[in-house]
Length: 457
Ligand code: TYD
Ligand code: MG
Image 1: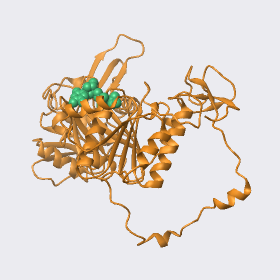
Image 2: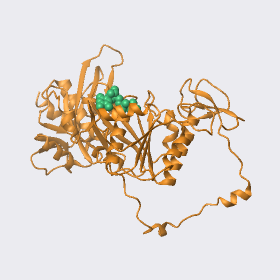
Image 3: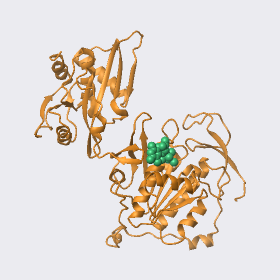
Image 4: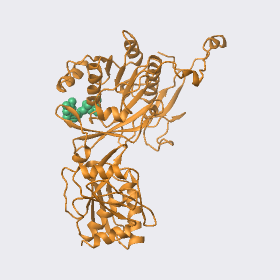
């Protein structure tokens, strides 16, 4: 163990370092997260030794044709491979975060088994479960016969020594980074210093050997990856695995990816036999639809390259409060306020005295502004009591002037809607015509949309 010659205080949530203890972290605002930690010991290197450690710069152009990079590791679980950008990159480090119990270990056991069956060397290191428990899980998943190496170990140096023995490792899964500790620091496992140091060692291992390393990280209540927040910038990609307690489906989202897109999502369903892929999420999200009820509109959205249709539900009720309630699940509350303000100022739709509830069905979360038109349609339908056509989808972005702007990938949205049996689409003028089987009603402004819905009432 290193000599303890200096201590510091680090916020366990964001990693900010202080010289004294204090109750609140100035950097992230969290309370009671600052704990004493031994500082990592830096040793001065004598100049004579330093000379031997000189680095070497390589010309970029000489890398051209200097041998092909190793191919990506494709596990065959399509939803995972797509989010990764076409498979895992050798030598890269990936952090997968998510709430406890969401299915991270299950997903990674399945991915490990799939890669091992393709003849790659995969080692699954569990710091949370004993080897037998991992084996039980694999049995439950029907993967007990896969040639995956299992290890129960929490010391980063030992893990690297284990991985370095024998033939080169293609993929190493570390479950989880919060349980890892290194000999070189004195703090307890799970503290920021330990998490950071262990991650550094594993990142160096990945870069030196060309193995792909996947780190599992737990997320705190506010959605940040605890401790691993300080790891986020060290790794090549950060994925989050999300889900809703009441629903069976799980969504894998890339938050950062040096080797792939960040707008792709992977959709899975948790079944009794592990996670199964959901190649067509729209069907899942629309399966329990209340077609024909006022206040619901189907939004034709895009998640990366894939169209996703979801139902948007709105409820408006006269408010008994001085400041009416605005409750949103699955969408940006600021965006809802904007749509409400535009409806009020440009279309005369007054919701100032009403409570407004907005829900994206199925627990899905929409990030696109293209949902503005569908939200406005659901709100107006809820207010007037006029149901929207059951076979119509909506998409388009509202501007503050009340105009409806075109959005990207109109044809892809229309094709998906046509495939799922929708016969009409309400879309911005221009840019979204010409798809077989679906009639487009162009709207240039929210006022035109309101008039259209009022005509049905
Ligand atoms: P797990 O992968 O252990 O979650 P994490 O590693 O993110 O903490 O998943 C645990 C949950 O998944 C648990 O509540 C049981 C459920 N589960 C299934 O429904 N089916 C299965 O086949 C498996 C293995 C787990
Ligand atoms: Mg786990």
